[in-house]
Image (cartoon, rainbow, N blue to C red; front, top):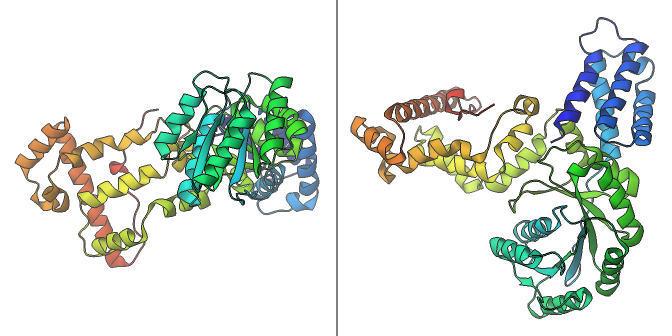
Length: 446
């Protein structure tokens, strides 16, 4: 996410790090490099100049020159300005009403239909809502089929009229269906086009007038940079939408759209999305995004994801077992599976301060733990809960069952025992629990 921008900003800040003397020239060069980095990220020149002028004003004079850590102070100033540029604070999402009606708009290929499914899943699993999806994209081939498949994946009903092209009638009928079936949120997936055109704008404007939506969200492909910002402006002039959704943030995103769309249309970014899985949708927090762009990580989001997946009672049970030195393979397997539920492993590691750059060129995915899982799955239930039972003959059977050689099984069991011993030692010493030893981590490809 924004790797190129992050690297160029880091290079800019290096002008102020490790210098014996900090002077006006160093600061001016750093600000020029920041402006260049923003322009390379497809930020409009006027916006980039205004941004760096504000940074220069705040960094002027003794504030940076006499600072003990001028590099760190400059990073903080840039972080604060990036946060303001992207909206300042988390934007509220309005789902009041019975039912609340949410209208989804955007160009074809922006990830609009996928986001519609993700939003329904988010409202169902995290907000306790009962959503109804509405297939109002009547032009794109298989659009109704795609939304039907997504609805099936998340267990949410869908309303569609395959023989009709009257989207206003479809939407009104869907709202009546929602009221009759006690669905409290209606999410309408509208048609996209390859470019902004009058027919598209008229249709979605008529739809807005007919259903009076609680929220109108405009979906933007973050990979399209400044073009996405221009498209958003054209839509906002006609629709006056409530917020923006950034999709495809797991791609080769330069960052221009995320940084400048709030400035251009004066509408907040409300959600960000990456990947195709239905649980990869996050609320957009400007400060957290600024921190990630500057390589500071995002510990807050990481902790929130962990809290969503880790059951408190299960955590207490696991802590008790660790204190009694009874941690077993079944416990280890459960921890792996919960970590995987938190999201893409590489994305999670990027939330740790300093790790984003380290894993940038490393091929990491959730399949990286399959080796561990296959070995544990080849054990009997008794072996999983009683590691001491595993003797040479059992190891041979386990290796054969998971299709791995005996040396891999031996190495895994040895590393598991080392981790377990470290847990016991830390428990006796009253210290913090250790991280998984390096040897327990899967081998990733560069």
